[in-house]
Length: 360
Length: 187
View (cartoon, rainbow over the protein chains, first blue to last red):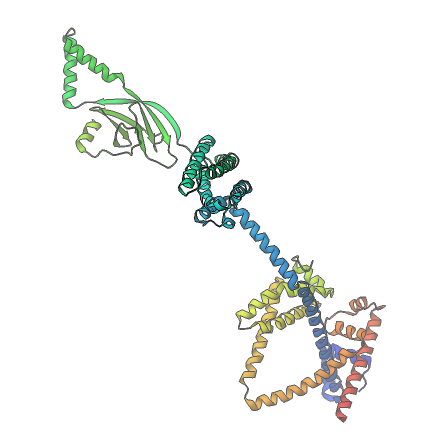
């Protein structure tokens, strides 16, 4: 079965679907008639399938070979190294994230420590470590006291940390007091005066340096980092007080007024006039409008200034005085104002008779 | 570039069309997870994944190299469509084998063996043929490269040389196959 180039190209065109129209019809007619051509087409198709199969396998081999090579490059040693590097990275990130909290956590650790020097929990920041390592070295010289002293050291440290925000001097004084207490404890535990003194001297020196260097820096840092919000004074103004009297009092005043005209020399009239003057002496009161950080609604009245919290300076208010009691009108409601050094909540007046008098 | 960077669909198509085989590695790594999750979701297991991924990437390679190929959607959509066809074809094949009875199974097995034998002979002959001829025929029949591209890839003088060489290679291959068949007939 020999194949010429023309037939080869024709069969190629037929098998690839490029043959169409009359050429295709003519080729199909030939296929029906010519068995040799049918065999040639069949064989050519089989060979083309074989070529495709080989090429497919070749490409698959190319992928497999290169993927395998890459996997090989990432050998177990490489992977292990990569894992270790990743782990170290994660540990470092975690360490620096929790670093600010280490002091607190180690404090708890100290409380729980059972005297094991390796578990002395002196793994704080470097300054802490260095100072406390010195304490350790002093203790090491007196091996018999080692366990006891370490058991006490965390207490001192706890005391120091608790006083972070106190003044440096006060902190120092308190530390000394605590150390003295430690001396008493040591004495109570059966240590000689010389031994206790030697330990305490070492501890005082080291602890003072800790207090000076670490705590002051830390407390300053905390101060710098903290923003302390305070209540804010929004406005201040003087408000006239409407003086109210019971009917009796009003009549009394009215009567007094009449008398005032008629009996100017009368001593009773002078007394009433003086009483009136006294009442009018303080017709205004200083009212301050404050904004509370915690959203407090209420007031504080010390007898001279009325501090209002949670009341807008734009809000219309009125003050009335009845029987030496001050009443605040806010909106349509009245609130009694009690003189006190502490802040009070607004208490609305519900007594209908009192409201009637206040509304007159 | 192929390992770390994410490259555009257009660049991938360009690379396939220029018959740069390195792009296959990128495609394999890029779409492996996508195809794997599709197969796992559709009742497959890890055993089938490698084959389906490879077949999918190679089908993509073949299809993109066709002169009529145009990318109308994202390449990932196209890839997953091919993988879907490949996987459903595989499932269909498996279900067919399950349904046939023992007798029928033996018949199919016998006929398949016969067919595979013929195909295997041809495959073996193709594998053993001269490399230039094998590459030339593969570029033409499988990769769909035209004579000009084949000339460039195989450093032939011109397209006529490619045309002539292609015929000679095929004629030689056909003769070897026929020779092998004749030998088998005598065995």
